[in-house]
Length: 81
Figure 1 (cartoon, rainbow, N blue to C red):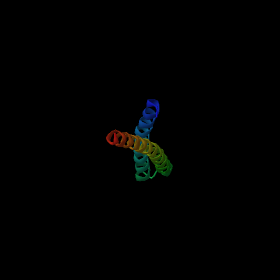
Figure 2: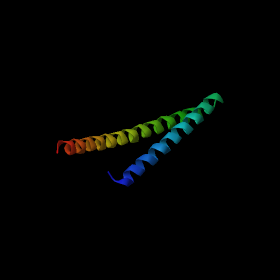
Figure 3: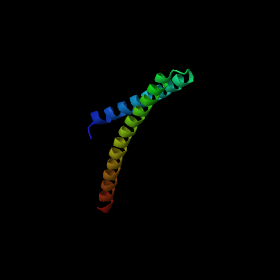
Figure 4: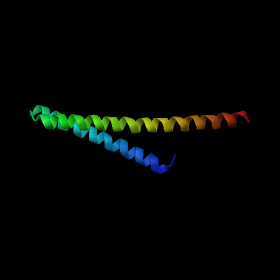
């Protein structure tokens, strides 16, 4: 995995978390003030941000799992010799 891909994933996770929080806040304010379009829009933005966050978190988890397995294999090889 390239360092640039790791940086992109980290930036996407950070950005999508902020978008989710902002969308949720806008949705809450919209529903509280009876501005339905703002509430629905904020809710949709929050859901989209959550889905993007989950996607990039899953990618990161897969990458870290593969790195863990490679490290464990290297340790086993080192111990076997």
